[in-house]
Length: 97
Image 1 (cartoon, helix red, strand yellow):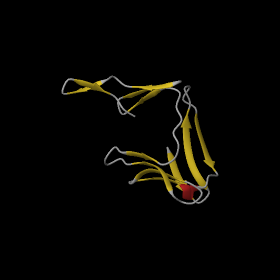
Image 2: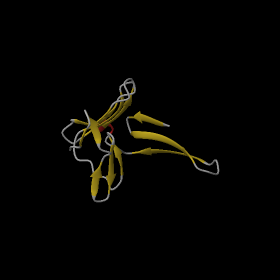
Image 3: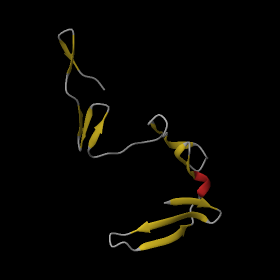
Image 4: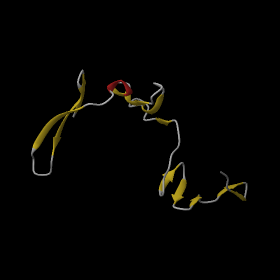
């Protein structure tokens, strides 16, 4: 659980043995927002660079994404390639980036 306060972000952590730890992280809380609007991270210029909208399920990222593996939009991310299963349109195979 995280709560935003004047001293930073308060948190409570429970480890695998059930031990509970409370603390306060001295973070720049003006750059981190957890609210009904979702999770929002801002850069040093106060511009939103990460927005997770709980109402729509949309995730907006502004900047560079680096990945060695994963999937995005039907594309497979590998360490040295980006591939997709070929699609067909009227019997013609095509792919594009």
